[in-house]
Length: 214
Image 1 (cartoon, rainbow, N blue to C red):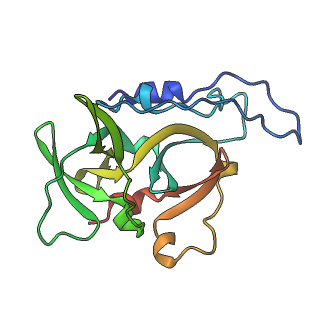
Image 2 (cartoon, helix red, strand yellow; image 1 turned 45 degrees about the vertical axis):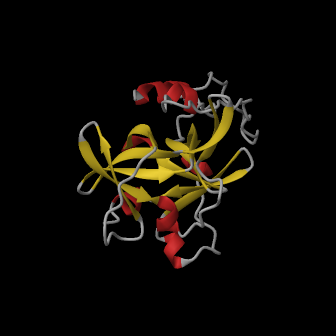
Image 3 (cartoon, rainbow, N blue to C red; image 1 turned 90 degrees about the vertical axis):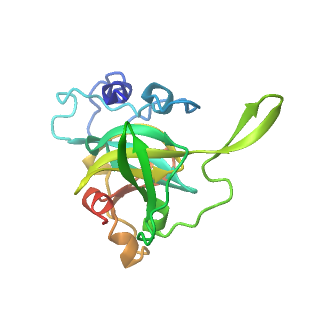
């Protein structure tokens, strides 16, 4: 997938510099349903409007995150570490593998490990996670589908499995906050920051921990 298209979608229309003390405007956004057959960025993501031109906000550093869902929780991962987004339909288990290693898949002739982020973060699997109703002949059937973020790990590429990609957002660093104090030590090991997006709490995964887990 061409991730340049994702970033193009992530650039909103330019805004005039806001006055001191004036709250930042919140742009209108419309959801985009994911594609059934391929994880095209143009079908999966659309972005919060934050001007890309640094002259609009000369003192603010902007970070790009890909938002995705794990159960009912929302997470973000640094866009610079993601090479593509794929659909996962079949995973081959690996005997005596760690709990968070779901198995391996074949991607363009190469065997790549699949990391179960839910297992890594101790998030319970729900019955409908990763399911989608599709028409098969004259019947509606339930088809299990997971999304995978392909990223470069310590020993090569790996896939971070999740329940659905939402969109790309561009967040000023000043809107990133420390994780809540009620998280366990195990959770804090993987959560770097949190931020609020469309009234939802988004946890930002620590790149070095998520990609170097085995």
